Length: 393
Ligand code: SAH
Image 1 (tube, rainbow, N blue to C red):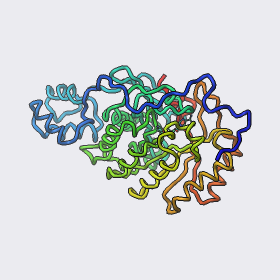
Image 2 (image 1 turned 135 degrees about the vertical axis):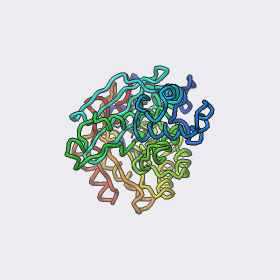
Image 3 (image 1 turned 180 degrees about the vertical axis):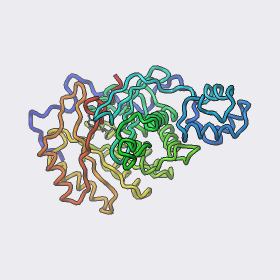
């Protein structure tokens, strides 16, 4: 199924680099301390009582944390002074420490580098748009999926993150917005436009979310549980992106939380996808596209197919046609949308983004076959905060 490649096309894995192994199970390290955002409402009540306090304190704490976005216990004025510090120390240990913040786009894009309790480093990116605020979160320190074009994949996997470590990234963004620390919100437009809450969370930072399934689903539950027990976000605003761990995609479809699923496909044929997304050697194009289709069927949520455009690698006209065929074969009931992502540069990578005319032709061919497609406007490139650039260095 492959066309002969012109000679000047660089090989997928740079000659000097040895392909990395796939790593599914994160090395076990000292667990991060348990945090309020790890617990269910029942567990919170039980643990508050076990610590010698009345159960209703749990609701007060949740209201401060999720609704009031108050992380300073001195502001918990409905709790007695001595109790505040004790409960804060016990249930809200600091999990993320800011190492560095970089911003661009007139400070409406902010990348934060965090240090976790054991020194592991992860990044999150906040992006404010006129009508929404998107937070791109990490789910693992590093990543074991070894995609050769992705800076995170090239660094290997350090460890899984806990539910609360994931949730805290969103809470930090929410607190920044609430305190007016991110320009471009309602206050700057006289209150006429804009969002002052995190409206969208995308699991597109560091890590493979479905390789850390329980913590990720736990975090999603904390985000969508109505206030004050959770952040009260809409599941529709949440996107989980995966390289295609088929059994976990099937499991996610049965959770009853209709998040958007994004599948990082990047090639419509196994020969190329085996190289670009090494997990393809375990679950191939047909299997992952079937699982995506099945996800859409069960959840009634349109799935996104992510497709990076890499010059002369996966951007040929015949691959656009094949991509359309692979998707249309499964029906035309609006189950799928293609997001084309211009390749972002990563250190040591020999590839570049597609030429404009090849990109336009790729779009044209998908549209001609009735496949909905958009080219993603990539933010954060100048702060190495764009897709595939997160390396926590
Ligand atoms: N592991 C998951 C979550 C990370 S999402 C996944 O791969 O889906 C990050 C998104 O950015 C994925 O679609 C990924 O393929 C894409 N990406 C990675 N490296 C990139 C690069 N150099 N340029 C553009 N997009 C990239």
